[in-house]
Amino acid sequence: MIRRICRWTVIILILLFLYLPILILAVYSFTDATNIGAIRGFSVHNYVTLFTTPELRDMIFGTVVLAVGSAVIATILGTMGAIGAFYSRKGMASAITTMNQVPVVNADVVTGFSICILLVVVLGISKDTYIPLVAGHVTLCAPFVFLAVIPKLKQMDQSIYEAALDLGAAPFTALIRIVIPQIFPGIISGFAMAVTLSLDDYFVATYTKPATFDTISTYVVNATKGAQTNIKTALWALSTVIFLLVVLFSLVMNIRANREN
Image (cartoon, rainbow, N blue to C red; front, side):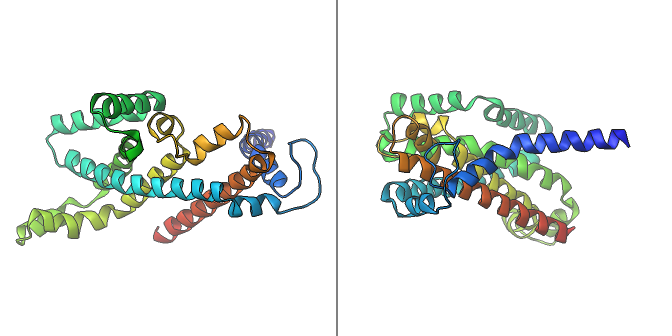
């Protein structure tokens, strides 16, 4: 009995440590308070400001477009890399997997600075073209797509693919009609992870973004250095909206996974 109480106490403390700050921020987002510490009357002013201020709307829209576009490219490259590694010889597959681990364990600041040096300094590509920014986010996200797809390839029934080849299907046709449908849940998981990583990134965007463009992360950091009070409090509302969307997405994915099982 005591062990059970201790276990639940630890779990509750961990959950409070993780979610209590977010819940406090969500509560203040529905008030007129200008600083955390004194709760005033109920208000949706922060949400009105968030969705009616052109600067904030453009920042959110640009961040979402960047995240989805980068995630699409990263998903294609990561899936191709995973399939290539899976069907390669053991030595080549091991080498590809090892190289894929480097961006995963590498610090984001190193990845962003390296992309900036390679594309902007060495190749002379202007940051105003958004190419360094997209390349940096794809480099950041593609390895995680690789890691999401590889387990599905290992779980796949290889005999179906071999049977398709024996029946006369071309390798590319067998890939599209047999392999891709079987690993599709892993591709979707990799895409969702890529979108999340892109939305959350700060360091890569800092080094590679154009001067006139801000993602949510870079905007929030810069906003703490002297933005107007109404903009700062509107970011409380933005954080709450992002948190609720993540919770909703997680619930949908878990419900779908339970139904499939």
